[in-house]
Length: 225
Length: 94
Image 1 (cartoon, one colour):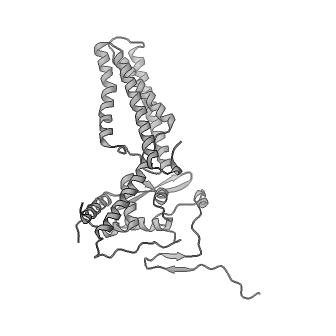
Image 2: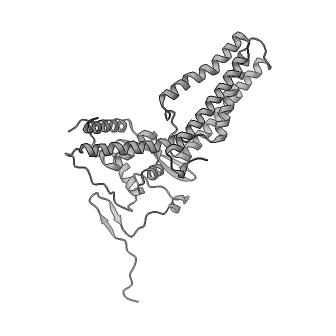
Image 3: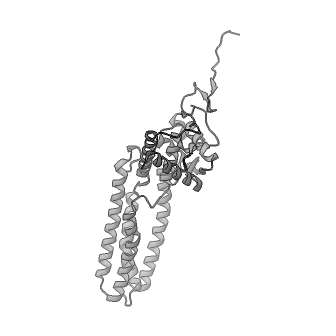
């Protein structure tokens, strides 16, 4: 039996904050994170690779104005960085689907509402509207889930400023439906054509706006093609 | 004691976690790690503290056979974070 064999040992210490530290244990490599059987650490299952670097704030002390200003600036910076991720645009194929849907909607709804048969029977327009809406909603559900998986954040509809989103949420339905009623009243298909072109332009403009907003501050690591 | 100032949130990393979750609505653990440049253990410790305080809640979801943890602020967490920001602004004199 040879003597003085040094077995690998782990130095485990306890810090003031109560976290065990193993200085011999390296940070978990990224490749480990892709192992199918591994789980990412959760608040209930903390790993003890390094101590928390923050000292607890004394209960009595309040930050100085300079410290408070720094904390506020830090919070604003974090917020801006995550907003870029929240502004990740739809994939191009879905932006195309969305544009096609809003462009088709005035014709399908107008044809369905029309008192006289226009190009197709009213029932055919109704089926077109129903099928395209179901298809759109199905794809939206799919792409929404995929978007969440890819970005790792919740899908929000308040990423853009209100001065942009409020006119859209009111104006687009008015445009899409109002044109159909105008067509019903006047029998002029120009209403439908104008609404279709305008809706498609709005859809493209919003996609480009999200692309621009996303690229403005997002790191290259998750920028979309 | 200043009204709304929350010592638990004020720790720099916890303030950043709250800022991120408030802006994102809900975020995956790995996203917080990447955005805040924190190790898993440090992030786990701070989120655990926020969860214990009732400021953050978690949801587990499976993706690609791996379990992912999603975190979000609770209504109490949102209120506390908003109150804390207001207190900081008051200190700054805004």
